[in-house]
Image 1: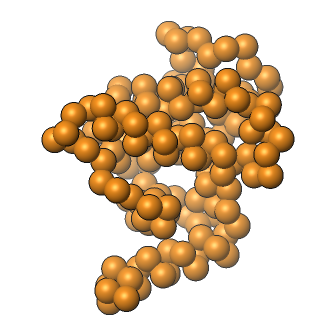
Image 2 (image 1 turned 135 degrees about the vertical axis):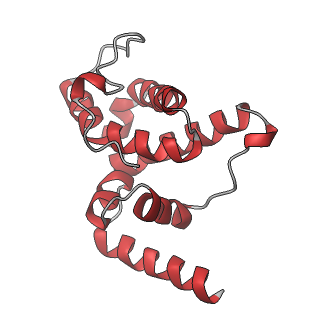
Amino acid sequence: MTDRHVPAADSACADRSVELPRVSVEFAAFCELHEPRYRSYARVWFQEPAAAHQVVRLALTELAQVWPAVLESPNPAAAAWQILRDTVTEQHALAGAERLRPDVDAEEDLAILHYVVGLATPEIADVVGVDTASITSQLRQTHRWRTTGR
């Protein structure tokens, strides 16, 4: 399900159909690294690749607008991930009541990234801005909770 082999020319940041505001080299590099994983996550909630692409595009556009503040934050990857999650939730709700995104918490998102999208724990840590040990621990807790109910 992952878009691990999406060429850079196909990435949302390289898409010229909707120009991002003038971006820094740092932002372009961030997009190059994270956009394929963001799109894979969005594909869980939007089955049409074009819809997932558009949602990620919206998130990256919003991120570009606040990029200097994000870079100054204690954890830029976590701030960017939150923008993506908020955009996915908002756009999914706008898609219609029959397709509402379930109320997914951060721990369930980690499980989605790992078990559905197929990211390894270091990749998840990089995407969401949390250390690998925390990701491993949270995945174990989520798995235990799902299998035992506690």
